[in-house]
Image (cartoon, rainbow, N blue to C red; front, top):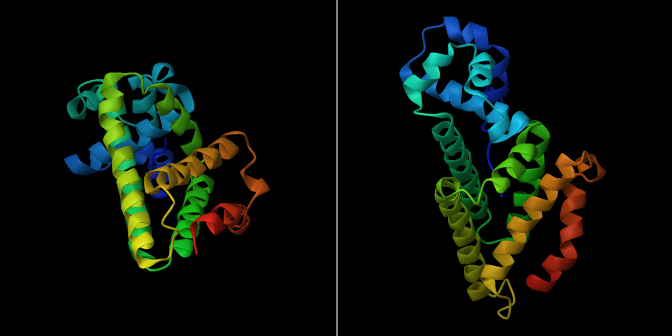
Length: 218
C-alpha cells in the first residue's frame, strides 16, 4: 500500500492557505489545492476523523467551496487515493525504464526514491496505513487496487525481460518477486511511521536488500 503526495507544493499550499484563498486561481488550480490539503488532513486524522471543515481550514477556503469540486468527503478521499497512487506508479515506471538494462540499479533506485519520499513528506507513511484500513470499502478498493495491479504489472514485466536477457535467474517467479518489492515499500513505511526510518539511509537499505537480490540477479 502506497500513495504519492506530490512535490513540496503540497506543504507550501497548506502553509499559505489564506493567501491562496484570496488569490484568483483557475478551477483546476483550486481543485488541486483542495485535494492536496485534504491528503494532509486525512493523513493526520484518518478518513473518519477528518471533516470537510478541517480540510477547508487547511486550504484556507470556505467549506462550501469544497462541494463545488467534490460531491462528498468520500469522493474527495477516493480522488486523493487515485491521484496519489497514479503518480507513484508513474514514478515506478520511470525508474524501471531509466535502468532497463540494469536490474540491480533499478531496484536500488526504487528503494532510494521511496525512502526520500518518506523523508520529504511527514504524513505520507500515516496515510498509507489509513488507506490500508479502508480497503474493505468497495469504493476505496475499486479506486486503489487497479493502481496496485498496474505497479505489479510494471515490475513483473520488467523482471520477465531481465530473465529473458539473462540478468535474473529464470527459476524466480516474476509476480512473487514484484510483490517482494512492494512489500519492501510497506516495511519502509512502517519504519517511518514508527519513527525509525533514520536507522537506515538509502545506501544501507539497498545493502540490506543485496542478499535477496543476489538470489535474483546473476
